[in-house]
Image (cartoon, rainbow, N blue to C red; front, side, top):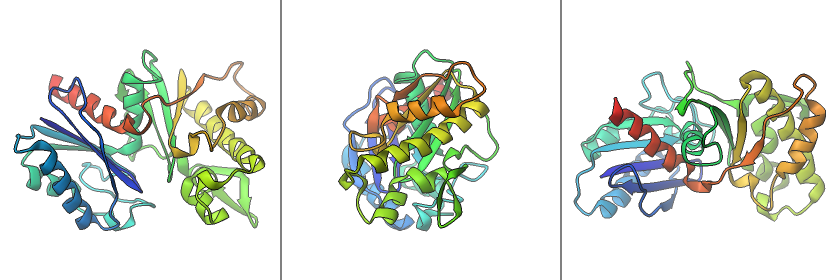
Length: 276
């Protein structure tokens, strides 16, 4: 039995796989604010699900950059009380199994590249526009090499500012930014002009990502990309006007694995580890 998980800023997702070919039922739990509470909740949910079966290995994503050894979060705007919590060591102690941690966007991107909208594409860029904004570059079905991780949400977007303050892409288009700016949940905002302006801001981020990473395809996921949310066609419209260097922009597709992308990415990563 293999344990797969995805810890986001607002929700934790947990699933089991018997053979790394299929994924069992997905359980969704609110993410506790504190690290130790999170470990306790995760332990309770998993022990109930496995029903006494032995866990062979664990793989999961967390929302933020990890330390060099991939054992703990070193920064996490939406999981501040998880920073420096010994996540890998705690999980290994609780479940007596090897643990592999990755940034949540890396795993969601890997899932989309191997099983989803980016399948059969060599260079896949995945961006999640959700509570925060994350992203990754997948090359040949593997997370691209990096030193400190990928954080496209923290690129600066000059066109987006408040009171003259230049802001990051995450400050412009994320769920947290919307709640702070409009004092509402994003899905409660029905003003088309607001969403259109947000699509334009996203287009600047997509342009920067394309000129830096030169992908075959960009896959967009996350709660801000739902029906009430950012329109991909409108973002592409603005992107075509912003891009001045390439004759053709890569396809911009919506993620198809939805909230399970990180779980599928964890399964793909464990598959690769088992082959080595």
